[in-house]
Image (cartoon, rainbow, N blue to C red; front, side, top):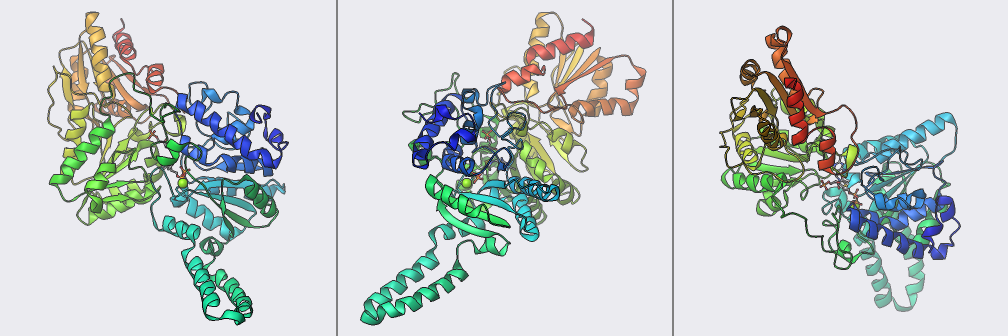
Length: 628
Ligand SMILES: Cc1ncc(C[n+]2csc(CCOP(=O)(O)OP(=O)(O)O)c2C)c(N)n1
Ligand SMILES: CC(=O)[C@@H](O)[C@H](O)COP(=O)(O)O
Ligand SMILES: [Mg+2]
């Protein structure tokens, strides 16, 4: 067992080169064993095992800086950099992060999770190195999916211009989460298969053999020279060469000897280098090789069959499922509806929309900024675009939301999935800032559905709304409306009263409504009756109702699954302050939500509980506000 001997990359370097494939097999089996129990980003990490071995074999981390883009493929890197013993704790609270993490290891120069950042980060390190006159190497490892992100292009442009020493390793597997899309992906495929060059070579060989007989060998020499010239014109990677990089490859990214030889040969070269390696997503585990999308990010599974472990409870439709079905139903009736994803058709629930309405579906690649700008164009030209994107990734497109959507007052619908605590992906992925970053924007309406019925109604409401709308919903199950509560029609800026006549009011937003219903039950068993409001709108807030209930009840508690600063509760306080009531009354208003801090990874339910966003937490807040 080689793996047991490795505590750091120094130990890795002691292993003979010809034994590295055995080490790779051990690392793979360790990754599969752990991820089968913890869940995680399996397929990408399996594809980058040899790459991690080769990079750590050739470079001197942590002095040399190695940055994995996104970081979801870095499990082998973690295992080889002193974290093998703790690897079983992957993505568990207080365990190892699923992504590179600055506070976890000196071998992780950055905490990452969002795509297309590595070249910028690496280039910053390279530029600083040159100013400090030190000599560390800087390496950015970027996937073909990540390469579609604008930030990556901006960085390549800058690197090529300034020409500093650094290495970009492009890990091509023809996949983002879904199959890669875009002209660049087509270009990379051309490089890999080299059809023009190969066709030329085959035709030339055949011609020389069949037609020229004995004078062939002399001509062959001439042709070889010509071929070299021609190769210069159609050489793979000419795009990167023109951008100012020396291009090497494409290489088999699973051949450790080839990778190490090449890295050692090129790493002393000056200027920006780009090494293109070809890998297989899911390499070494047949179920993941065959279903890379399914195993991109997986829950626990059975290693022998590759089957996902049966859920403990009966599976219920998620908010994503509800969104998926409802948008399709709307699109059947309204031909103006289009759907846009930034490389996440499965995660956002748009896969079946893409099949049913291929001409109205757009996967723009990992390009959230472009997704929003593109949607603005569609809306301006008379379509009704729904941009389905995770809350955390929409942060990228803030300026496009402000300038291209809100300032133009266009009817773009932003559908923010994974809004709130996402769980095991942790701080890079929790969608906790969106209410705050959207609520202050002119012309923007911000909604959050309490349940399945609300989401369906809000999507329909948005289809009629000529101005910008954002609908945020969390990861996980969408509750159905409870039997004793009717569903009021969705009207702009109007909340819905679920329980009336209480001594205190709970104003709950989105995912917190169902939890607040349970809190109301707890309190009612204690003899405390509450008025419960499904706020529906974070902007505009139903100010009339807020003021009315402030007067009518003894205390007010707001609850939201988002950061409190600038959030829904802040909006309620702003309404009370603007009206002057906050200054003239001693009534207690209590806001529940997430603090202004980066929240770790762990189970969604546990993390919500930690911040009082559970039935008992809400009940306790009401008791406190009432002074009981
Ligand atoms: C800004 C941003 N948008 C979307 C994602 C979601 N995401 C994570 S990995 C990934 C695909 C990355 O593809 P690639 O870089 O080719 O890596 P591979 O999974 O193929 O190894 C996507 C879309 C993200 N992490 N960050
Ligand atoms: C690495 C990354 O950003 C995605 O793979 C993300 O982890 C997907 O999250 P979901 O599992 O919630 O779709
Ligand atoms: Mg890829």
